[in-house]
Image (cartoon, rainbow, N blue to C red; front, side, top):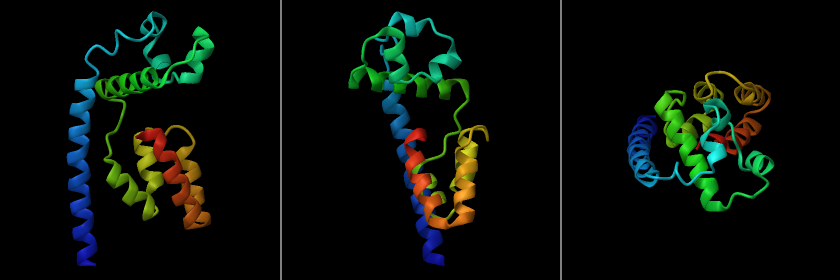
Length: 145
């Protein structure tokens, strides 16, 4: 038990340090990326911009976002969420540990401010049987990271 707690503490510190480095890299890479986005996207409401997906962009403009532009869009959304305080920053390592131990619904709820269905579905799957909840948690990890 003592080894498990030590491992979890080291994993938490390790993942927290990666989160700080990733935030610094994101800030550095985003210098000027807002100017590269389409003028239609720059004039959108913040809530609409935060929920914009490449598929919705294609419906709006009629042109497909490339990989580079899609990454710029997601990075810009991430920066705006962090600047506005909407995103609860939970390290990815802590998220993984919570999902494995069956507490993924709590982390999902914290990151979504307990709105939406992801955390309810995960809670239900955890109670029905542990393994489907873990699988759901790992699939939904892409929505948060």
